[in-house]
Image (cartoon, rainbow, N blue to C red; front, top):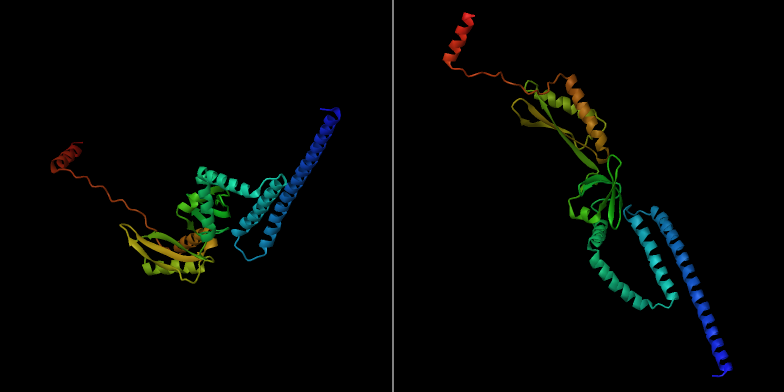
Length: 292
C-alpha cells in the first residue's frame, strides 16, 4: 500500500468520525432539549389544566386525576421523541414495551389491583372528596382518590393512606353523602313519672334546639319496659355536616329539660337480702341473746 493511499484512508476515516461525532452530538443535544422542554411543558400543562378545571362544574374527585393524566401523556410523547432522535424504531419499541408491561403486570398484580380498584371507585363513586366515610377499618374525611391509594384525614387530624383495593373490597359507609341524618338515643326513666309529661318535655327540648330539624318531625316514645325503668327512645333529624355538633347539643338540652321538669331518671334498686335459717338455728340464736 502506498503512503498516499494510507493517508487518503486516514483522512476519510477522520472525516467519517467527525461526521459521526457531529451527528451524534447533535442528536444528544436535540434529545436533551426535547426532554427538558417536554418536562417543563408537562409540568405547566398539569398546572394549567388544574386551574382550568377549577372553574368547571366537575367533580372534585376527577380534577386532580385529569391533570395528572395530561402530564403523563406529554411525558410519554416526550420519551418517544427522544428515542426517535437516536434512531430507535418506535414500532418495535412499542412491542417491547408491551411485552415488558405484561411481565411487569404479572409481577405487580397487587399494585395493579389498586389501580383497577381506583378506576372503579372513580367510575361508581361510592364517595367523593370532602365526604366522611368509613372503609377498610378507617374513618375519616376523603382528601384525594388516586390511582393507587385513597387519602383520608381522621377526626383528630391524622393523615391515613389506604390502598384502593382494601377500600373497594370491603364495606364502605358514607356518613355525609345524604343531606340529612337521624340521631337516635335512649333515656331510662323511673316508673313513677307521667309518660305524657315525659314525652312533652323531651319533644319541647327537641323543637327548641337549633340543630334538630322541624321536618321530618322529631319522635319520642316508649322503647321498652325494663325491670326498674321505662326506656324512652328519642329520634330527630339533623344536617349530616352538623352531626358532631348536634348530638351533644341535643342530648344536653334534653337532660336540662327533664331536670327542670322534675322527671326522675331510673336508678337500679337492690332488694334487701333475706337469709333462709332453720327454726332450730333461729331458736339457738334467741337463747344466746337472752343469756347475754
